[in-house]
Picture (tube, rainbow, N blue to C red):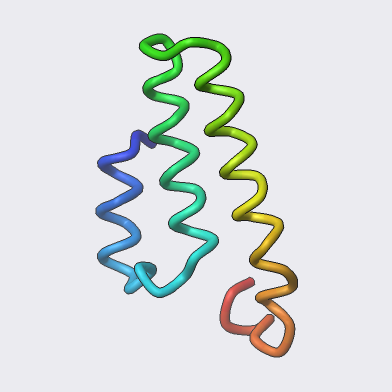
Length: 68
């Protein structure tokens, strides 16, 4: 699945309000640009994505049935 397909899926499933899906989209877009950017820039952006993902915390607590 490429970033365009993932974006369509997120829109179709009302995933725009689900930050973990937006992090996945950012990761996919970064993966697609990997050959166009320097290793340093890639690592900085990857670290930023990781930080954002970790800041989500335990977002699933209490809504497990809805998201899994």
